[in-house]
Length: 477
Image (cartoon, rainbow, N blue to C red):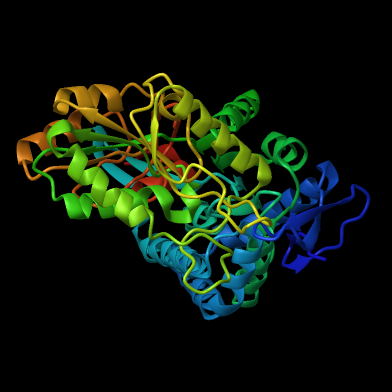
């Protein structure tokens, strides 16, 4: 039985019951974790608070060195961690290995930035006076992480929080806590001080709310759905806590008539069906110029029909199961609505034959559903991609911006003027030009509109984990 990680050790919790962690490919129980309530969350937050003095008092460069050592230790255990991630989340082993590596790279990136945390100096404020701008950590940070990329999205919060001198209490999703718990132990064994990184387990309404409402938590960093993000924003507002919210998305991809169609088709396939389509940042609406639509669609259909669906532990599997039965039912309902609205199913659209166990669903392409259908207006968190033909760039951008979301976007064209116009006009926090959707630690990332606020990645992320303080110094003579 897995237990929370608090103060540098795994602690036994009794009293509120335990929750099952289930393999999405088989429906079998992998392990159990406790449902942590107010008492357990308070213990973790107190542990983090007690660790702050020593951690904040350490030179930032030393914090970076410790984080880098901890990251290397995690990488050395990737062979152990990837199967555990596959078991609890469902993704293929290859994708699990990629995710652990991505987590490590993010921590290494921020470890390298530790020496670049700077304040400021303003000369000659007044006669005989100058100013300084100090940058100080916030304190205890609550990191609430979803189930689709449990380690990648943890790293986005853990890296900048730790190098700026904060301590973290993380709450992974109740369905994917096991890899996070194991990583916490590994990082502590590698030298991360006790209490600097704690993990509590449980659900959102109980554990997540207790963490967000705790009076000693100075910031809530959350990745997840927009509805839950709204609730957390309201909880944080009650005590004016800082909040970074990376929420839902419905990323448009525009393919112009001069695009490299082979590369565009590959990017659409990977961008939609990686992690079984369960990503906030993913291609979720495809707009193609009419003159090349038939050719692009033919290439895309060919790629999608080669994607093998099955348990993540099977050799050659490229798409694992959806994470829960409810998630599959939600996608099925969206596909059914699209077909009812007039969409033609070009591929998939059903559960795969011979896969009675597990939450499997075929990768699905839908041509020309209604623009007011659910796949057009909602976030599709699964392996289904709607495709529409458009007459020109103006129509494509208008359709792209019609969503309430504004997370990512991509444009495929050889025309620099078109690319520039699209980058400037599309309402999203990220735009890729002739590129697959790869997130770089060097660039700030965050949503517009109902996709959230605040930034992760880039040196800009450090601003969201620190306070600035102005100091006036007047010479005595």
